[in-house]
Length: 164
Image: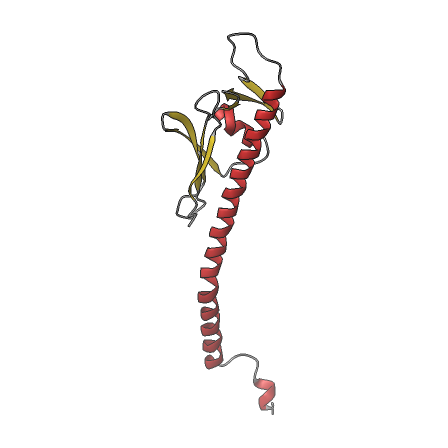
């Protein structure tokens, strides 16, 4: 005859129900925290993209100032080499265009998750720089507005960092 302890291999229905309930409670507690961490990660990614854009703008400006003055009538720094890419400039700063600041920032690495949309801010050409959603609702964007005049600098402003 087989002893009683040798016959018990699995869980009883009650033990199984308790295990499923515990797993459900743990999942209910963990999922909101996971969503919060994804939002925080996107916000950090957006701020890093803004910092990269600012650094690229500064690099463009330094390279522009190091160039010899163009002949009279030609624009200063109409094109500057940044990371091996020809970047179009306006008023000595990167233009708000695909061949301006967008190509300069893209030259630093993979930016497939960035959406560059043309815009105008106060009559000045601009690019709305947005992180693609990736299944998450909510905007995550800033604006790059090119220099409005020869003495002005471009504007980089956070417009929405909810990223939720």
